[in-house]
Length: 281
Image (spheres, rainbow, N blue to C red):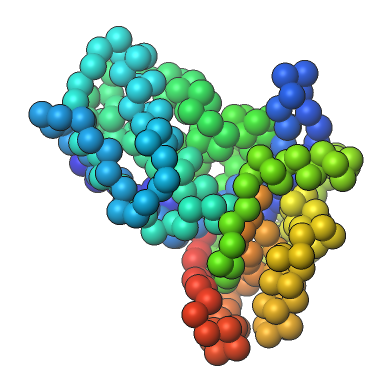
């Protein structure tokens, strides 16, 4: 069995505080986009989880998905999983979380759906932040630790030009630096974007409320991002935004040809830099 594990872009990402357990609470609008990994699994005589590139871990979100699925079933089966990675690791596009969610859905189908949607959702929450969104959402408000999902009307016909720096960021370190900055949001941007989506507003209306807490941090404190934003924005003459906690940045439009023209300029002025145009799905 095989399925696509689509990535996401954060139209907003606000950190509104910390829970009593020390976890950061977010409010964010997630949008599924057309970049994807491919997850294939089947029953096997031996258990094996294989990635097309070096993930740098022997216990990934896919490992966790397998472990928790069979713990919930109170049984064990040997499974072969092959993940073809297209979503760059550390890009802020949610590749690892999406891989886990698709693995859960495929496992449930492979064994004739023994688990309910609620069961799968509970497993997804235990695997990690953002995994619940990827079970079946397209556009949604995501809250809490990334484990509270409120579906929205799906956005259609919107395109994103993604630019990938050569460096990565640690999500844990990013939150530590955010704590040092000592500021939290109230969820206002997320509310405005979600209301605009539900009312069928065009992307220009939505675009004015794009916001990411980590972008604010990086533009103030991180020399790598300060230089990267300057280089890309001066080439494209556009304002770019962070998705997730980084490291990829994006600009949005409903005109794919316009984005292709900007992509070409960026690539000419920055040979070897990876870019990609994706769309809402």
